[in-house]
Image (cartoon, rainbow, N blue to C red; front, side, top):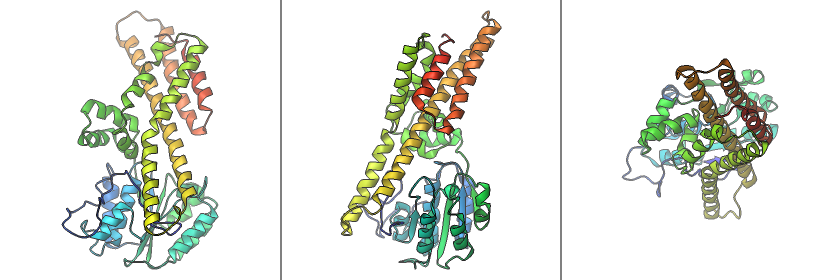
Length: 385
């Protein structure tokens, strides 16, 4: 893979094939889209498109649902001289992210800037180094509001040897025209059933697999890391036990909020390990080509920081879902348990569920997490047991 700095690198830890050798030889055939879990419709669309590709494709869907696996598989089919045989060096290197005609452009800041778009334009004019075409991948198109005019011109007058594969969480109104110049492929959150089946296939027991699938929130990327997260069950218990640990005091609410934030920070560790492995791989690649430093290191570190912040926020939202479920279970028990229960108790529990769900919605505004959780737990302290 060539980054926007023009140097090869590899992404480690995502389960992409490659192994110790990328040369041709007696290797098993690789299914190009094995890692694209739960996206069968998109896979079928991309397989068909690879036979007679047009100049631009746009993958639209929430983050973490398999974009990288889809892009790598599609790129292998486009670059392989046999249309994606899964055996040759081209397929193996593309799936591993180290083929020189797979070019990825990541935003350098909070948005895809005009300068980022200009890099895309320059890269699009580059001639393929090995294959008959090159694949230019641009992520986070939904954050390209200011850069849209630059990208639009390139998509309207594409270079003949370049296929663009863009991805976006959604298509805002100001990017509708850009999107109209691409073949759109919609992606969807992976169903809990599909995630559960995949997790069981990774050796996770069925009960834990279901709980992880729910916690993954439709993200196969999150599910992959949860497989190796030894503290997952303990963090779920921490959130689930909150109703029994609240005692009506602000001190307890503050202490529990601190515990929850510490557990969310701990949840990021598997992702940090993945990022460390990626950076080490890039450093080794740079050293092997005579580079004194990792090209684009700051941009890579910025991307890692963004991913880690998002992962931490997703962990808190998943925990809030567990907490809401704990109060919902109490509400169901009150209504169906045959015990005398006044409307006040039912109202308290209903209000607790609504309060937790409201905070989960509020997470999109990037609030002060400590204050947010403390205020929620103080509010919930009025609902005992």
